Image (tube, rainbow, N blue to C red; front, side):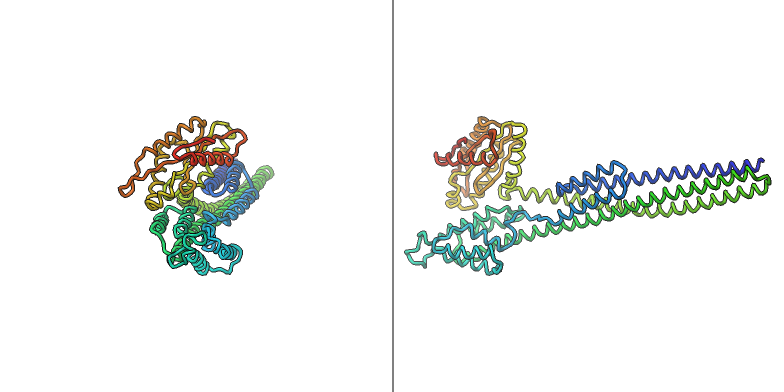
Length: 516
């Protein structure tokens, strides 16, 4: 039976070769699945940093991908990611409520002016219309506010009995109202030059007939910034929509890959079953057939059937591999594109965040940054109970500096004070400008006694510094109030104690500090 043995050897060789091929395909599918999991995890990392809830969901996705999961589990996670991203897409990214629209700007300007008694009723009616009703368009609102301010300003053509009385406003008070409004807003650094130009116009003095133009300039400035904010929001929304679309595409790829993987397993099982049936048929023929020619014919028929099955299986495998290869190329391109876009977006967000928490004039941190930092320091203080002190600083007679030497001189003084205080602090300390001429300093790991040493260093540094403006010496001193965090304190209570100590320093002659 040498011919029979040779056929059986050939069949066994083909069978084992097929098994090796199946094992190779199984390893290849496992590698593809691993690649998809890694791609999903990379995508989860790329998308992080937009929202804490979304970050948690993406973390859950990465953790889930460490295990073997079915499509239903992945679909549930993708559904949660979709919901989180949609919430983030719908949220408001405007820097502050003060930049909502021109009417709101008019309302803020209105509240900054302390109108005389004769004009309070008109001011209240305008305030109600701006705040409650919607029948005031922007141009009408500007005209009404400017007319109200102009009518209430004292001028040479008004009766002597009204000049410089409590029944009229001085032009200086109007100018101060505009300046106070500008100081209350945080402008991006790109707009600092434009803000300075408006301040210079105010410093030079505005006439009664220039009030309307000033209102228009301020409203236009705020509206322009609002447009920039809306544009930034629109760009971020566009990115998030692209992210959602790519998540959907990735979801489809993963689902398709899972389905193909299941189809491949089913196909292999069908092939294995068919081959086993042919093996059984060959074994039966060898056992029962006595005619060599018929035996050869039966074995050949079974081998031909196995060959056809294997050819069909290879054809289907090649087709599935080709589809998956195209999907993986698309996935790889999407991931690379998203990495580049996410990198650019993060850079833009970091830049915008820095602008949002920095004072454009001095470069110091602003009140928003202070509120964020005090929350972190307070939490750390409560947990570790290490000493923490807070001090509030105020430039003495700052209004007099502005009135005597002009607002450019005051701006120069603010920049100088910022530099001198900053140079007197450690890298771990925090310093911010929280008002017109008011600053705050946080000293972590610092007792009250140590903080007074730092305060004296700052005070003497500023007092001894020679400040000149247009070849004139401008005397500058500062006063401060210092308070240490004690058990049971809140950050608001400590701030109030420091503020009360600052008031005491002002009352006791300035150029000094007190503790509270």
